[in-house]
Image (cartoon, rainbow, N blue to C red; front, side, top):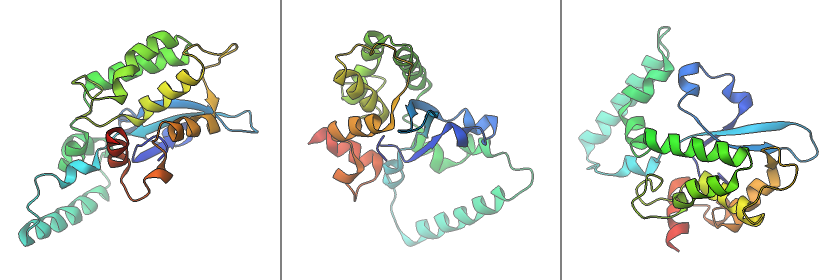
Length: 205
């Protein structure tokens, strides 16, 4: 939860996913495990679970309908011919949680990350700078700060916005965690909140 995302995984897990599901993930960091030469890419699935609570009457019939729908989906996913990637376009709950994450957002972040990775931090800063704040931009995501963008921005700021000599596109894992903690996004600061809500309240405080 240090990146303020609900689902976080590494390249090891990414290789086990089907191509269709893997395409739905977002590459957000590259880290080196302390005391090891191993380098891992970090991915996330972007979901705003707060959206599930919006517009729901919460009545008895509504609860029964949701319970029935959950059972139907579970049974469907056990089917031999079920294609997991299709749930991103068919599951109404997932579609609702991902509605704010546009293709434009993903393309802009991908461009920013590639520049960050390549050591072009001035360009990366320009592309990422709006993602931590509100203001009607593509990175805004409905007024909620984007944790992965905040982490990269904090790391670049700590180095004066210039990639260190010998930069290889990755950072030590403790640096990745401390960047979020110093930016006020650490899970320990808001233990009772969901990742997205924690990000929102960190920005508003």
